[in-house]
Image (cartoon, rainbow, N blue to C red; front, side):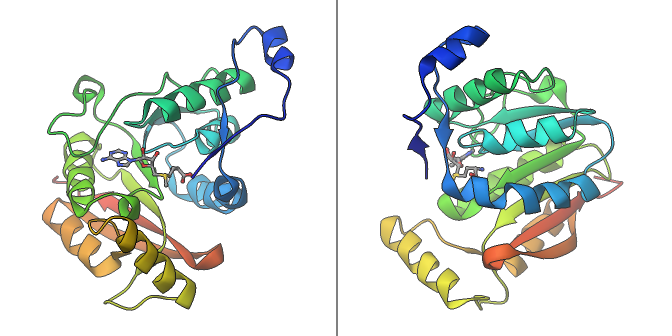
Length: 224
Ligand SMILES: C[S@@+](CC[C@H](N)C(=O)[O-])C[C@H]1O[C@@H](n2cnc3c(N)ncnc32)[C@H](O)[C@@H]1O
């Protein structure tokens, strides 16, 4: 998923007073950040607090927070290296609207941020297929508990529809995921839509994205 950045001299960071460079780089994040930002600019609320689940390297968090300064970004990831990288990206960019990365595993019955709820949006990019189905269950259960009414849950990644992949490359990717871990795999929009309904979240929009990916925008019902 990620590569350590060994190119940049640490002194550049020391001069900024942000300590050791722990930023990791993901080639795919660099490629998809602009099209995802375009979606977020349209579907996120103009103000408020956004919880990001499975932030990975933190490149997305840094870019989105810089482009959307009226929002407060709360990145989270259960992986300590991901959290260190995200904190490093935030420090390097000098962003004041990104909170310290949180340790959230969506499968946990409590996420540790209950006292901060309701959130104005939840974003999870490229997570549900590289995690067991239990992570999708946990994500929707948490979103149902933690989102403000009418607030969006935005997913991004490869998704199939009614058992059919939208590209041979996604079918191959799905097979490779399942070979690595039988509980992983590209998720079906119909399954997520059913899960959303059961959790009080309605699929409002499916957006075709570059490289055969999709963005899914769920919205928490007013009575949820
Ligand atoms: C493929 S990476 C995607 C990172 C980033 N969102 C991106 O698009 O580049 C998947 C991330 O999901 C996180 N993740 C896996 N299982 C999770 C879980 N149960 N709860 C929260 N995050 C999880 C991993 O630690 C990892 O950082």
